[in-house]
Length: 153
Image (cartoon, one colour):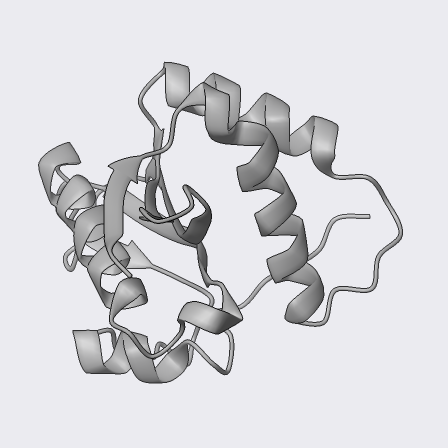
């Protein structure tokens, strides 16, 4: 089996969104809302303005997307550990269960981190699933115990 890597296109979005929803469910999301329209809107807008990029892993034998990645680019006021203020927010890192432990996620991660470098990001951040922590720490990510989130309801 050969894996090919390519960037996400608008033609891939329906499949990409279904994979994303499956990933969120696998990670434990129980909410009962349809995210498809919101995800479609987000990806179309941010792919068009260059603030979202994704690399895909595709099984060249059957054309199936077997791995996904995503990087959103945001800008905050510069600070000492990120003087550009540009941050890459990593998301949508997922590999089909049948294709795990083959280096696909590491290759996808390398490609989207390179996109962040090219964009001028000073750092990349992620909220990692339990399964992803080993990959990210082996890549060089460091846990930040101060990360907090407030949900606006």
